[in-house]
Length: 165
Picture 1 (cartoon, rainbow, N blue to C red):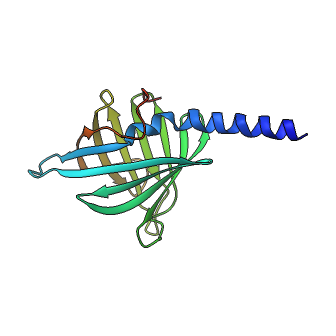
Picture 2: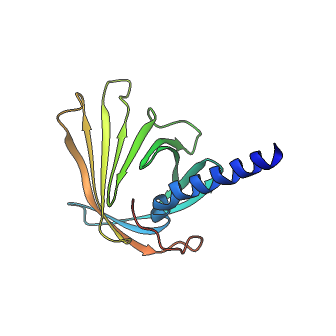
């Protein structure tokens, strides 16, 4: 019985590790260049796997902004939740769907019925084209922000080759 539990625990850790592999792409320092904005932002993602969870602390221009939690739900899909520095959840839980280099975050409707969608299109390991949109009906989406993220410094904690999806 004990051997079975140990083997099951090892298999679960290996499965979670495999599920987290694409998420490690976020680790490191990024230059965020929004379309139409002359001054870029500096984004640093400090990411780690914690048991069945994966989390990234996002620091923008030197100020910690949020902790993003990822929980694998099925192959290429994750439950997500953003937690602000005061401990409050930012909006309802969401979903991340990964299909190769194409990643889509979709939030549940907020208290006003608005959904948010962020699409990341990876171009190799070091460049992401992003679009942020919102919708009141889940059919017509309005772009509120778009731009490019370029890696400036890789993670010192994760150096293995990872590829989206």
